[in-house]
Length: 226
Image (cartoon, rainbow, N blue to C red; front, side, top):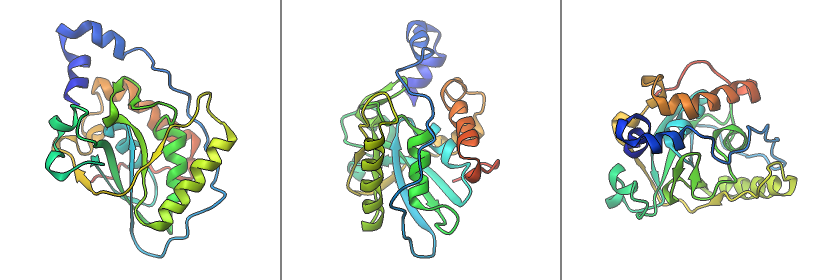
């Protein structure tokens, strides 16, 4: 997020700063409905991967979910050799900024994580961008791990497309699992450690608040650290 930080904090980039402080074409949070086809997951800890723009905000939302025991910011979709922040930021590696969520399906299932992802964690109608961040590394994608997650993800995306809850079409991709690569340590638990960062205040505080208001049944006040 070096470029984002420069846009927001660099005195020489006041024009870019002004642009970042303007709303993109995002829809308001949506109370995404329960899945018609729920996940049937065996007991024990599970892992899910989501890509939805800047991983700071995604991490902040999912870290406040009951049943979630770890959220790690990183990259999915490309090669291990290119999975460093500066290279991924060029938008040429095939990676997407993403989070790896560890959760207990006895407390929150994969399909319920999907409700949060679509409802408040990201805008599924923005193609290769989220808010001020533009490029394929900020794409909106589900990365199912295993056939059950894939089955549920496909069904839920089809369910939401049929409902037409957003003003624009859903562009969320379902991508094959190709591995996950953790991001820099200084980017982990970012919203917790940097609550006054301009980017967090402008874009991510509202997401966390929307989670609390929209899905109170899964809200927990504590931030789950990676």
